[in-house]
Amino acid sequence: MNILSDRILSLEESQTIAMARQSRELIDSGVDIISLSLGEPDFDTPDFIKEAAKKAIDDNFSHYTPVPGLGELRSAISTKFKRDNNLAYAPDEIVASTGAKQTLAQLMLSIVNPGDEVIVPAPYWVSYFQMVKMAEGTPIVIEATVEADFKVSAQQVEEAITSKTKAFLFSTPCNPTGSVYNRAELAELVTVFEKHPNLIIISDEIYEHINFQGEHVSIGQFESIKDRVVTVNGVSKGFAMTGWRVGYLGAPKWLAAACTKMQGQTTSATCSIAQKAAEAAVLADPICTKDMREAFLRRRDLMISKLQEIKGLKLSIPQGAFYIFPDVSHYFGKSYNGTTVVNANDFCMYLLNEANVATVTGEAFGSPNCMRISYAAADETLVEAVRRIKTALEKLA
Image (cartoon, rainbow, N blue to C red; front, side, top):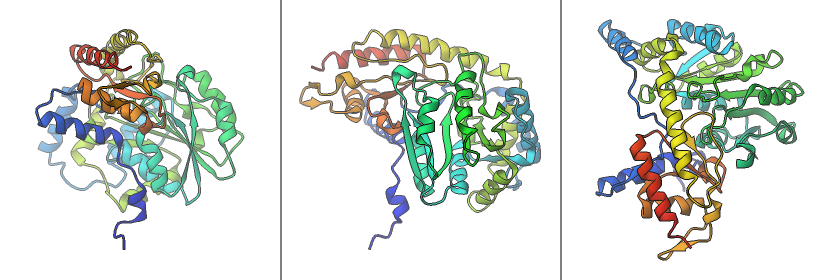
């Protein structure tokens, strides 16, 4: 008899976390690994946010809070949504959780029944697919190509919708591609969603502040569908607060209440001190994110210029986040020193072992011809990483 549940046995380990673990093991054994695998800003949390947390500690803010978050935090998020995104979510339509990952997971558990379909454009963030499975739903993947800047068309979405479709789940700016949907592209998707009034649209906007286009557009701004949009965000990426673990959503009141109910039986509220830090972050003028965004833009341009020197990589120019997602299929079938690269998994393992650079296979994101590179690292580290990659790939024949 198998003691573990079918649910846990059917789930796959996060491949971004798996690659990070392999990298750490090699580093611990003395190998000089450059890790470009994890999606984490290499900046420190701004001082004004840390000061808010210190004050909360000194003020003995160390007790349980309401399950969906402190009233002042939810009011602050409501203010942020209106100020930055022109979205009218009241405090009772907001739920703060232990990271946007929990926000999304309990959202899936709150809306998906066995057999329900959730449309997920690929490339997708690594956990979307597994979250739908965990909720006993069926992920319906629609593929975007590097030539389309990794964005799906309205026609592709229309063709994927069936009587079983419960939700559409996407991110903009996108992890892993850095693609950003502009207002016109979102408007085209909205024309499809208008025809399907029972479909829930879930927009993951965690990379909102790392957007090189100059304007972040939330799909919840469109009047005709706003009552069916769930906007997911958090403080991890834009404010370099990954370890603080605060994510949140804005949703119709009935759905926010459902997520609160689910959260009440799992984690309850997230850390009270982290909530006070997040309150300071979301109330701050977004200009405070400018220096980090400019640093990522400089690094993007540096990486693109260096990667373009490598024969066989097909690149799109990401407009947000801090990832590049090249198509590496040119190297499939090539070999060196007894190792043959059959697929993207092999490609990334080859780079780990031959170049001592950790990346993540595109297979983890639903795009088996690609790999993800995070450029959340110092400029000199990125230059050295690409030099190593170029040298290793030149050996393949």
